[in-house]
Length: 127
Image (cartoon, rainbow, N blue to C red; front, side, top):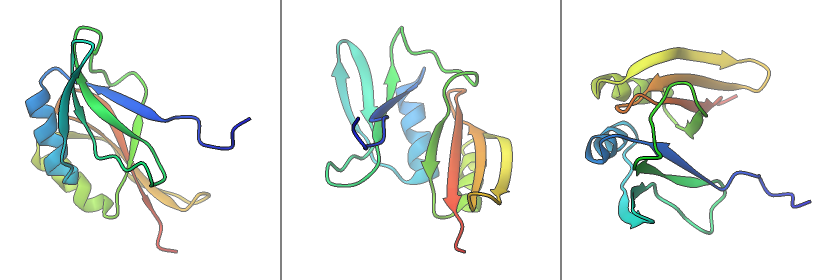
């Protein structure tokens, strides 16, 4: 068995690619690269082959339906409170407020993005 993490890519369903890009740019400061793959519009999050972790894309097409009830993607942030303020400023909604996990020593929160997806953010504790 390969010791690497099992997940290597994610796609977040969107209805309006411009709106979704703007939302994530304003919340996290990400830049995107657009491409059409198999007839589906994609906006790719930053990716570095030499770094740890995974990347993904905002994805628009008939098979992509935004939902709060599906898989939850977690984004790391260095400033959780500021990230949540950015979410609210972009008309996102806080679904699960900033909460500290004592066992694993991190802060976590969830929000609804511009498209109606449930997204989580996590900040490691300084301790």
